[in-house]
Length: 264
Image (tube, rainbow, N blue to C red):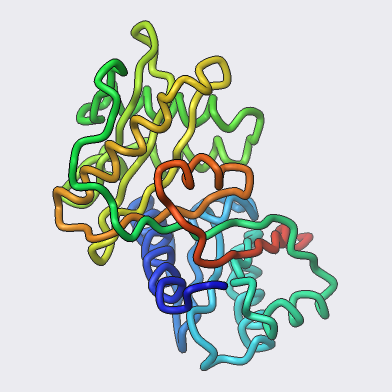
């Protein structure tokens, strides 16, 4: 059963992570009555980081959410992703009535009692990103981990290829190396005393060696050092066992409805 208290907190942290990312790359944010929409300079509908919308409460009806959101993105010529909680039945029904389908499921994972002791493997070479060279290695590692997803690669170049996205008072990015080659990455963001972990990945030839685990634990540790009391991550279903092995637990799920740009 979902923990609604934790899931509601996760909602707020997740929305703020999208706000920060889009704000930092010069995008737009619109919000009213618990609905937040964000639009980058990219027209693509996915990933959700580029153009998306969340409903954080029920002050606005599901029909109004879909109508206003469609107008916001239509005016910009953008596609977008509706990120809807699995327990938001009204919004899911509104999506279905519009002839759309929720295509991808994501899992809200939290670590409520993170260890205060260093846990990363000492036999893994790890570095915190603190210069442009590390930034470029981080982006290249994320891109390689994602494979052939061109939309995701374009967003990485827009949203992560800048030092302020990876380093600063509330952000810490880490790389793990294998024989001197950057092989795995993770980014931690401190949001409302939560270490929000994202962009976790390993290059295909370097998986199952504990490299992604090492940098994920480093990102959590960095958040704890800055005052975080828990950690959280939005995970693909297939990555849930990876996070569960570190003590993360599922508190809810989200569904993505990808709506392409309107024909011009």
